[in-house]
Length: 428
Image (cartoon, rainbow, N blue to C red; front, side, top):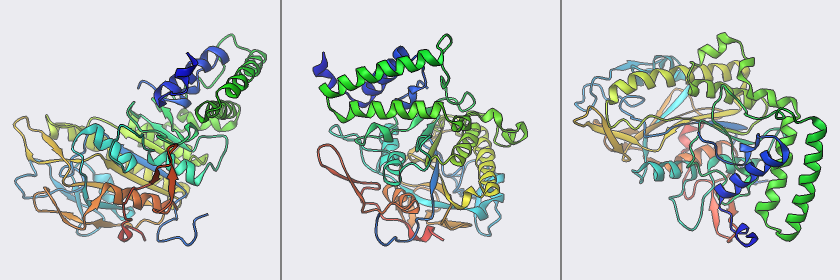
């Protein structure tokens, strides 16, 4: 039985730890351990950001109907383009609030990827590496957590809101760098209080018992995965008993402010991200799915566009108001774009050749459009930016050099952006 324990995969390790926490401690907060349903020398340009909010549009967000419209082209369809606060830059009609705030952000219109399937594209976007059977690479948040470290030891350095079960997480890194998943931002951090019928004395006795079992188990099986559980238990208990746990409760915000973000999980997730940054969480990812618009692309965009427009505009305003925008990098991206050609189901299909992303905040140029796709939005026409280049830009903005190497347990070297090169034109 125990022989098998030496070869936990990440999901099994996390599921085991969560089960043991609920059974032994009487507390179910430790989705912290897994999935839910649901000093570097001279620094180059960038490096001004202390933390990051990473907004991931899962499914493949269309660029023509969002941030790279092509008015007059036969590929544009019914989506209209509107002017912004920056002369010469136009956005889709579904983003009037971001159009007003174009002077606070940059668009990259020359993104390209070599992955055209969802799972592989999402993996590459998060890790800068293509999937391999022999290794699980670490996502951006885990890199930030490990290299930059915690600012506030009461809270995790890495959080994912509305994330999917295929998130790469900590990959080959220690479990302590894995993201804390929040499945519902309105519900906040589930099971962060003692379960009914469990007193503080009961809880402390169970902690002592688990500590004894844990020490015995670790002495017999001295693996870093097992050792990691103890650290994560301690982190979970520390968070439960600290005032910082209140950061996960967005109901403490005034309803008027909550409304400015929109009532959906994405908008409320963006609000939660801001609250977590106030408690010095390093990296917060918020996901929004539903972008796989093979069918009824334009009807879907009429709903999703305003949802994103409202939430991201509110987030930028809130970060600006609180001063956090000066120390935070905000990113919005997807795994690929969608085809200029409109199919027979009034949809757009997968299109890795060209797509768009947004970037704003600390050390990032504002009111700028980088690169360009061609007149139909089919291919990159100027200043190509690969996924690896984009991630290198994010990493360097956070002060992580692109040549910094971390090693897997098999001594294989990896970098935050693989062989990507930062886009220096995006830095202010």
